[in-house]
Image (cartoon, rainbow, N blue to C red):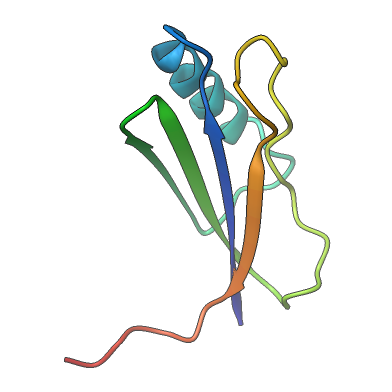
Length: 89
């Protein structure tokens, strides 16, 4: 089984690039290496990091920490998903 962890934050005004680089650095410092890591951004300086891990839904997995409160506008949102495989076309 594969588990996807999603981490999403919104940067404080004018700090979008800083949050993006902070998230990139933290993703590279995880205690273990995930199968895959993807870094995404969206309007309003939102940053999303998705990591894919081998294991079960409830397994203890390394997660990105909460950034310094001055870097973000609200608490980080986190989601955990169990991969069901690709969708057939």
